[in-house]
Image (tube, rainbow, N blue to C red):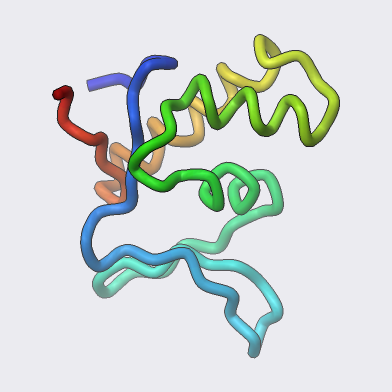
Length: 95
């Protein structure tokens, strides 16, 4: 399943975004796995709350970085699709 701008992503139970003070870096903690994150991934994941759509996340980032949403949105979808495949991201079921 591929994500769309209308998809609403969330971190599944047991997966958390954390700041590793030892390495002074953000990581995504999942059961028995840790994913190192770059600044872009942290910016996106900090907006993943289970209520915002990918379109809304891209819009917030576009405003923050003064870039067109159309430029950011495909990159956000690609990054989140990768996390979905690794099973450290899920989508909120449609109402």
